[in-house]
Amino acid sequence: MPAEALSRVAAPTVAFWVAKALSTAMGESVSDWSIRALPPVVAVLVGFLAFAAALAVQLRTGRYVPWLYWTTVAMVGVFGTMAADVAHVVLGLPYAASFLLCAALLAGLFAAWQRTEGSVSVHDVTTTRRELFYWSAVVLTFAMGTALGDLAAVTLRGLTHGYAGSIVLFTAAILVPVAGYRLLHWGPVLSFWFAYVLTRPLGASVADWLGKPVAERGVGLGSGWVGLVLLLAMAAVVATMGRRGEVLIDAGGAVDVHRTAPGALAAED
Image (spheres, rainbow, N blue to C red):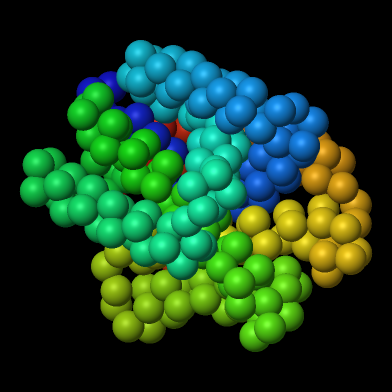
């Protein structure tokens, strides 16, 4: 397959979903820690600059390189969390309003992406313009997922019983696209993005439950330590990518097995 036909972003493999889940939880923990360790304005600025730098290198590279791609995802996780938190704390936007705003923006983005490029499949991200659409969608899913997770765990804590209840709620929710794909013949693209969105509030709920103080219905391990452990775990998973055959998963069902070389993605629809 010629290089220009290869997707510039990761295919939905088993390792992909593990790394994605870790990145969502890590982004929540690191964001919480940095805002407390640094002045909030400084933390947000540093988060944005790190995200912008990683994205610029990713776009310039023009191909899928596991460590670079997942560094960018990690920076999206941190900055996306900060953006959602700033909207709530600084602007006073309720979590429900943040969620609905991000959902509307994401729907508009997908409509524009489909109309412009004819496909929103991750396997078709083969040009810079498509990659810009892709990363815009990733940022919005992280921000929307953060707001949804906080809405469930904080605003609706009387119903969900806090972070632990949110973990159960979003674990059940993420089974919806899996069942839809396997049993109801949902398309792989819809199933993928549905599951992709839900990994964010699930991961954030796990991170908050582990890191938050006991007084806030958490375990009390501390966001800094939780973030460090998750970052190391994510790095370990990413280190295995590109070195072995991986099973492609669109939303919970195995599609095919491909063997990739370091720095290249040999996946097809």
